[in-house]
Image (cartoon, rainbow, N blue to C red; front, side, top):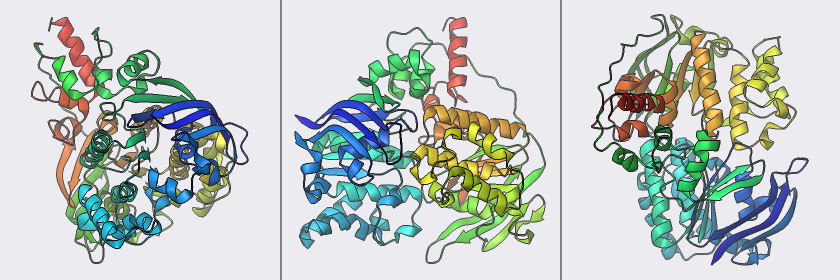
Length: 548
């Protein structure tokens, strides 16, 4: 039976002339698991907003065609009934939060439906336990990490027992363990409860195994609708950036079927002779320290220390990625380095001088800090005004960097648009641009790949490496293991406020159960030090040469 059906759906946002959706036809069957892919701004988020009536009822604009839920027009359903049947988890969880604590937020929808207190308590506690949120149930929402907020938003949707669940990049703020757990939960509720899942994801490497179908969108249209294995074969010829890492690894190996999972990739290596890898030792690009933390501690009121006697030294020209679980202290680390908060113990030095001795206006000229939420950087009427304000605030008169950064981030055509009207990926790039226009020596980036598509990730990674080659120091917090393995040289693993590993990526990411890229897992127990697709391909090519 059809759960959702879109017939010739066309939509324009208010004031826009370009169609966000252009004659979209799509049928989602009950119990299906649909994965939607496509470039930032292609209409993915708009598509799922249309599925539950948010477009155009909340966002306004002009819509044409038909949108059916269980063969009835979405707009004819009573809103409270649709709320209980089509759940939604947004890309930015803060946009859907209205209460002050985790437990009250999860219970809010049930309260609005008039669910009996006894039944409500059972359902709330069950879903909190299911998602590992019980220890946080009395926590105030503003104290949660981005990932914890995302899991809370998912709990608020699941507690309603929806028949359809729409998710806009739900793993974007989750660490690898939590992301794996969440995707497992989605797979489980789809398989065992029969909830129809429509999932938008940029971190797609672990989603293919659960998906029944892949929908690929471009320019507001569906350009591909097929099963995962056929999509990968198509992407190998047309859109290699959209292939999962394991499939990329074997793309040119002349095999019958490209593997989608680590297990399938390892099966391709059975009986093969794997040569030993020898690499020249890597040295730091410079010995000049630009940022140094010595025995730094910091704690938020009423909570344990977020950082506990942490010591880190960053030298000029390094590209460092900081990994760790949600709530490990990663964002706190960057805020301390940017001078936004002060340590309760220890010392922070910037360019050889104690950070607290700098004038507050001088630090942003040296250190560019990008937080997790792009909305905190966007409050002017146009993007050009937004970036110009940053320059004016710091007393920088030249504005030539605005157009250069706009072109670099593919936002030159959006400079006169309101930043709040941009897509999630565009907002992320717009916020990044607001610090890049200053041309700081040090970049502190908190989840900059969140919400951007694989092609833009490649461009961002290449850009950051060029910045590194020019002598800039980059310290980036990320949950994107694949990005960290591909572009950084050094990895810091932060767990429970403590540095538990700090070294070259080939050392820190090698052999980990959770904090290792998929290519490394393919070669786990076979050879060591392979952490990127490029390294894996080179090894497979060597195997061909030696007859392996």
